[in-house]
Image 1: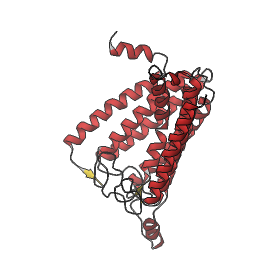
Image 2 (image 1 turned 90 degrees about the vertical axis):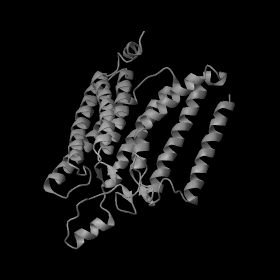
Image 3 (image 1 turned 45 degrees about the vertical axis):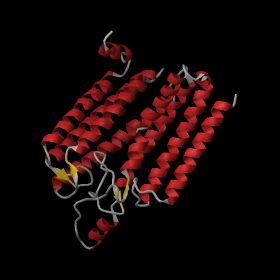
Image 4 (image 1 turned 180 degrees about the vertical axis):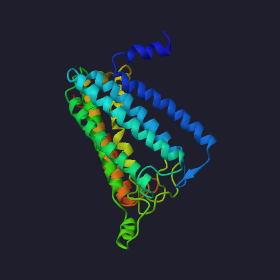
Length: 313
């Protein structure tokens, strides 16, 4: 059996529109890489096609996971399918607007510099509200998922809830900065309302491709980390199951479930940590002593918890 045939057989019961859309976004991500090589324009210090690339990769992971999750539902699958179709339509429309702005060399988010820019940003904002509402409804439906493997059972639920929390953290970026508020108070009209960088203006030095600020706090980090709990925790459950062949203790699904729950708690702590770090205007690559201490405590707690989960019978 070829790789493609094997993949088709494994995904035959998945929600088809979201699976196809995930594949399309994967192809679009490759096109964005080509566009970055050909089109050397930058926006706020980053390649103009970097943002469409990041959204395509993130969206491909997001919709591939939901395609799988919908197939696991024992009931309400038709309702979940409609909600996922709605997510596909909303994200596709938002992505078209985002790409349109990138092609024009204009910022898509927070941009109110011209009436056209403001209209596009407002429309995208309403789309995000719709996406959050549909994700909330899907997360509730996932709570009805019944799986024989306890680790996957909890990984799916915890991943969906933490992902919804991560998506919701995006609202932190919509608040006007102190400088923008000052412009309004003096009768001015700022070009941007909201920002992802804390403590500095958007557009400073950042990590390659990701663009996360290396000199200030960046609210995109908790948004990204939280949203992809939807993939991280199920992958943890799958990884533990794969290791069970080598480590007999992991053959007990109760042990694997304990480890997944510990992983979920640690992941929630990580989301809280990077949110706290960003709100203190601290770069992800320059943590202070307090951040390092909390991170060390989090790692230690997760390590001790995992050790106890494996040892206790």
